[in-house]
Length: 198
Image 1 (cartoon, one colour):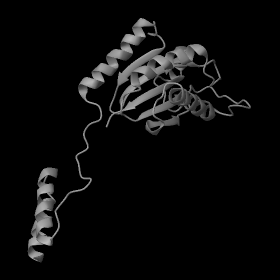
Image 2 (cartoon, helix red, strand yellow; image 1 turned 60 degrees about the vertical axis):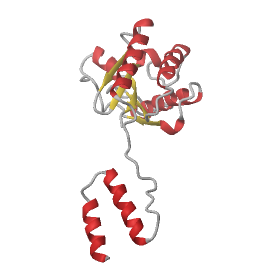
Image 3 (tube, helix red, strand yellow; image 1 turned 30 degrees about the horizontal axis):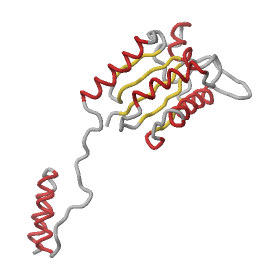
């Protein structure tokens, strides 16, 4: 019995999930139970290539329809699909309060991403010019609050599942361009909505 057990354990250490299930079934018969495998399934990809292309198409269609070319970008990297919204369309300078125009943009984006099963991370970013106000003592505070307010709106007004949402503030430390020119700083002041690939 022990020899048989060790042979089975050795064998299943190098097999795929279907073979593992078969081995479990055999062991169950040997040791007097049904050999049922509980809660052991391959985790499938949440979003496939076709869905990624469709998501990018819809966001790009939105950008063209509402003339957001200079304020909203969509790109893909190893993390997932990034919907990049520049500060000028969401917030006044030095503020984290969403205006009516900001909410209209987020409403349109929310309609596109609402049904996705993926986790969504809202990331706030600033440029490297220091801020020190009573409300936002630093760029850390500003970037986090911008991400938080964006996430709150998507959750409360656009019915994005809060279990899927996380927020992070990067302050000035994740620029897309060096903070050396005015136009580059404008690109770095942004909120990224990241649709996480699994």
